Image 1 (cartoon, rainbow, N blue to C red):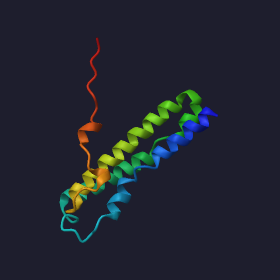
Image 2 (image 1 turned 90 degrees about the horizontal axis):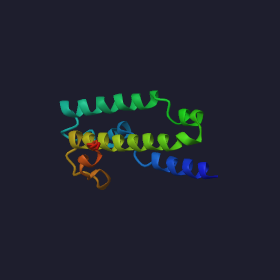
Image 3 (image 1 turned 180 degrees about the vertical axis):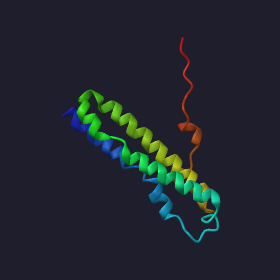
Image 4 (image 1 turned 60 degrees about the vertical axis):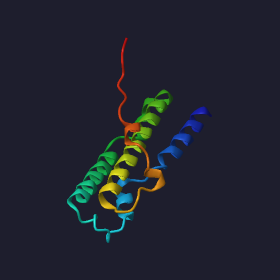
Length: 119
């Protein structure tokens, strides 16, 4: 029962951030920034990320490793969601003259790796 609840919560989290490629497709192609080299690079990076995301094992590995790995799979999915948000934010900044939408208006340093200090 607990595992089913964890899986349902994790699945809900995964759906929160759309793919950077999908987000890029939703931007206006009539925007002057759309044809810029920076935007082309951002779209290529998003496409590469989308392909890498499709290639990894995902939820199947968590099922194979057993119920104790569900926390690890949830952490990986959370990291992927953060990466999607960062890619979408970067793409918006490079490809659109419009202000950042509310869901992308955050400090990217919040997702930066934290420095760990060991005793």
